Length: 295
Length: 317
Image (cartoon, rainbow over all chains, first blue to last red; front, side, top):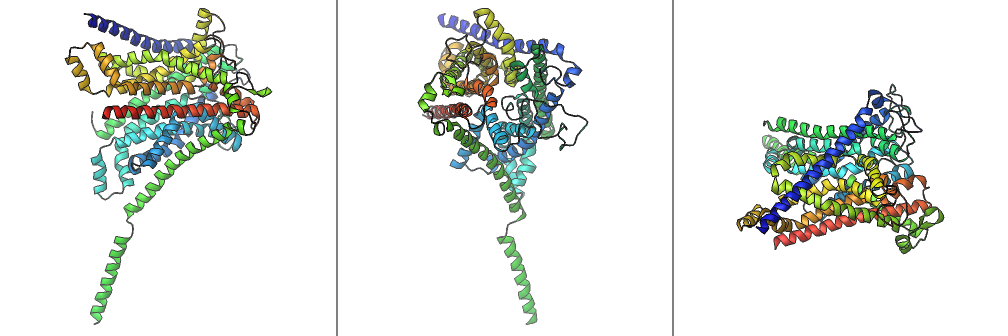
C-alpha cells in the first residue's frame, strides 16, 4: 500500500513537472507572438533603422541575416561534407582519428562568445578586415562546422554496409561509391541537419557582435555589384543581423519603444526559426520518400 | 626468322601493356587519391581552426601575466575589477559564472528528470508525439530571445516580488534554467532509452511499482548518462553570453546576494572587449577572462569523457 501510494505521488509530481515545462514553452511562444506580432507590418519588415536610436524597421537586418546565413552555408557545407566523408570512410580506428574527434568535440563545446572573440582577434585585429559580412560568416562557420560534420558523418555511417560493398564490387573507387551511392541515400538526414543548423546560425548573436559588427549602414538595394561599398552584397561592409539588433536595442538602444520593437523583432526571429525547424522536417521526409521510394 | 621477330615484338608490346596495367594506378585509384586529398584537406581545415583558436586565445590570455606581470593568484582571488586603474581581480566574475551555472543546473535537473521519465516510462507515445517537438522548439529559440523575455518578464517580476532592481543572479538563473532544460532533458531521455529492457521487466516481475522500478533500477543504471547530460547543461550555462548579460545587471562587484546586480565572465567580455585597445592591460585582462572560459569548456569536456569511461567500465563488469 505504501509503495503504491509513493508510486501515485511520484506520478502526480512528474505529471505536474511535465505540465509546467509545456506551460513554459506555451507561455514563451504566446508572449512573444502576442507582444510582437501587432507591431509587425510590411513597413517594419522592410523599413530602414534609425542609426542613432535603433528605432524603425528591420529591413537591412533581415537581409543581413539571410545573406550571412547563405555565405556561412556556402563555406561550411563543403568543408563539413569533406570532413564527414573523411570520418565516415577514410578514418582508421586509431589514436589519430580519436584526436581528430576530440578536436571536433572541443570546437563544438566552445561557448559561441569565445568563437566570436577568436573571429574578432583574427579578422578584425590581425587581418584588419574590420567588422564585415565575411568576418561574421567565417566566425559562424567555425561555430557551425563541428555540428554539421558530426551530422554528416552520422548520416553517412548509417547507410548499410552492403551498399558500400555493392559499389566497391562494381569496381568503383571508394570516393565514387561515397559520392554516387552513399551520399544520395544519406541525403535526407544531411539536408535535415543542414536546415536545422541554418536555424541555429540564423538566431546566433554572440559570435557576431564583434565580427559582423553592430551597425547596419544603409544600403542601396538597387545596386547589386558586390564590389560597390553601398551594395547589399558587398562582403566587406558591417552587417548587424536581426539577432544582434534585438540585443542592441535592449542593451544600448535609445528608442522610446524599445520593448515593442524588440518584441516584434523577436517574433520575426522566432517565426523564422520555427519555419526552419518545420522545413527541416518536411524536406527530410520528402527526400526520404524520394530516395527510398517508400510511402 | 622475321616472323618470330615480329611475334617477339608483338609479345613485347603486349607484356608492356600488361605491365602498365598492373603496375600503374587505375582510374579508380586516381579518383580515390583525389577524394582522399579533398577529404583530408577538409578535416585539416577543422584541425587548423581548433589549434589556432586554442593557440591565439591562450597566448592572448596569458599576456596579462607575462607582459603586464600581474600575479596569477591576484588575478584569480582579487575582488576589485577596475582595469583602467590596473585593478584586475576576476573573482567577482568567476563567482558570478559559477553561481548562475550551478543554480541553473540545480533548478533544471528535477524538471529535466521528470520530463525525461514521463517521456520514456510513463507515456512514451505522448512523449514522442508531443513532448519531443516541445523540447526541440525550446532548443531552437535563439538566446537573444530568451534574454529579451528575461528582460521583459522576469526582471520586472523579480523587482516586484523581491524588490531591488530586478537584475541579478536570480534572474539569470531563471533564464538559464529554461535554456539548459531542453539540453539536459533530451540527453537524459537518450540515456534512459539505452537502459536494457530486461532490467525494467525483471524489476516489474518482482512486483516493484513503476516508481520503484524507475528510481531504483532505471535511474541507477542510467546515472552516468544523466550526469553527462547535467554537465552538458552546465557547460551551456557557463558559456552563455547574451541572455545572461541582458538580465544580470553587469556590475563587476562581488555578488552579495542573489538579487543584486552581478556579472559573469561572458557578460564582462561582451560589454568590455569593444571598448578596450588591443595590447593594453584592460584588453589583456579581458582575454584572460576568455581563457578561463576556454579552460572551463575543456574541463567540462574532460569531465564528460571521464564519466563516459567510468560508465563503460561499470557496464562491462
